[in-house]
Amino acid sequence: MKAILACDRLGGIGYNGAMPWEKQTKDLARFKELTMGKTVIMGRKTWEATGMPKPLPGRHNVIVSHSKDALPGIAELENVSQMWDIDSYDAADDAWVIGGAGLFNSLFDRIDEIHLSVIRNEFICDTMIDLKRIADEFELVRNQLCLTHNYQIWKRKE
Image (cartoon, rainbow, N blue to C red; front, side, top):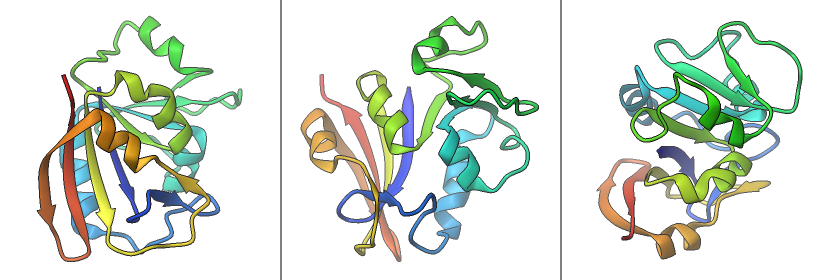
């Protein structure tokens, strides 16, 4: 399983249910390229933050939520342990955790690769990921300097 996230340089990923920085057009294009045709797993708040009234196109959308509101075209699970009961779910190859922080932390031990866009500024954030834990348990295999951020790929240490 892989994860794809963006954060500020301190690990902040959100504020009041939204990203605190302006959209990163090239980063969003990379997100689309990497996740197209795959399963994307997100928490309910991440789903709501996308502003999409429908599933992300071209992907199998899975939302982990305690809410009982049905969303057409989306698999909804009450907790992450239910994912391994879905026949069409292939945890090893086709799944991308796309947020938020709670879901990322819940699945951290199952994630083998993290694609992380680190925005080079600090923002007011109320949702964080632990960059130290990533550095402790993963090896940085790519660090591409972009105009506004660093695009990093981390692979789990063996």
